[in-house]
Each structure stands twice: as C-alpha cells, then as structure tokens.
Image 1 (tube, one colour):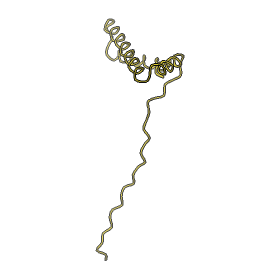
Image 2: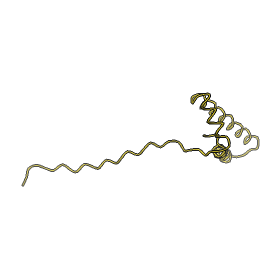
Image 3: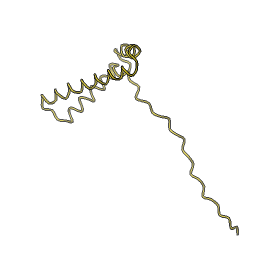
Image 4: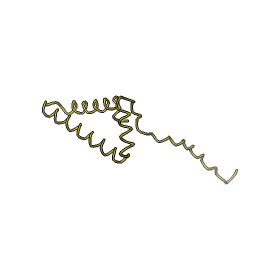
Length: 93
C-alpha cells in the first residue's frame, strides 16, 4: 500500500463565453440619417442627443397615458412598442 494519496481530479474549466454586444438594429429608412449624424457630431454627443429624444418621447407617452387613464402595464407596452418601431425605422442604428 502506498502512503501517498492521489489528489482529486481538478474540474475542467469551461471556455469563456464571448462578450455579447447589443442587439443589432434593423436597417430602416432613417438609418443613413442616424449614421451620418453620429459621424458628424461624434459618438458621445450623439448618445446624449438620442438619450434625450428617447426620454422626451417616453414622457409624451406617459402624459398621454395619464390623460387617457390607461394602466401602467399598457403604458409600458406602448413604450416597448415605440422602441420596436424605432428599431424598425432605423432610429436605433
């Protein structure tokens, strides 16, 4: 008998998953305008402008829902619908 003990096998390391990037947006009628604007004003200012536009649009949807008395769930659905439409039209390029 051997007095040496065998070390338990080490678990195999899984390969690192590649980092996921954001969803690729659709090419829509406004994509060329969006791409040109980003090239002219720069990525940082473009993201600020787009963020402000998204915020304002969400506020308009919220005010409309308050005015019409719709539920929170419907308002959230309208905001998601606006995002999907923006993607289809190329605003999220």
